[in-house]
View 1 (cartoon, each protein chain N blue to C red):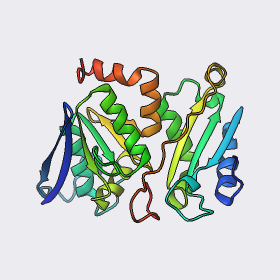
View 2 (cartoon, one colour; view 1 turned 90 degrees about the vertical axis):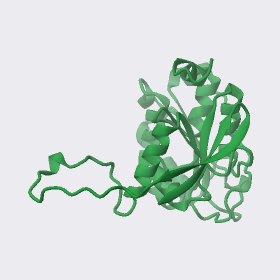
View 3 (spheres, helix red, strand yellow; view 1 turned 120 degrees about the vertical axis):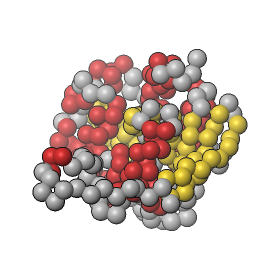
Length: 111
Length: 154
């Protein structure tokens, strides 16, 4: 389900800079050991021609860079699936994120 | 002295060895030496240099190095668990540090790698990525090929 909280809106707005063909911002916080209503754990599925010619690390660094403020202040974990339009056409499967194992006791800390 | 236990998975057997890093030897530079001759460091804040040096040694002294939450036998995060499972499935020997036990390393590795999350995988001193990248590379066969090319698996 696509989230609509402050952080997810901010993520969506900022990633629109990559002119995505497809963008899904999924708040997965409810699957983790955090208070209800949290916006701390996200999965981003983004398809953009901006990723062409880039390896996995470069794509993730690009997204991390765009979401630098959110990663610094709000986001505890960020799962990224970044594909080019051609790759998305070949395979648009989105794998489930691994289940939470409880994490550290200090749940307010970053991953 | 900075003492940090590193878990080591070798042929399925888990053991712990300690990495002992002595205090960095202080260097003195000629007062009128040009900045160009000073050692180049990543943008590491003051006070974090010792941790950065420790991490630098860890990733260089351990061919496959995983910074994770929990230990390989008891991961405390789903993303760390998935990464461990993949490394075990490939059958590569690896070392790990439980960042939950070492807050300085937990913060230090993020600065060192310029990467905001844990887990983080290093191979031969090179940052490979986190759980998503390791998983994608595993599914595409890239991870196994990388380990084979590096002669870390047969």
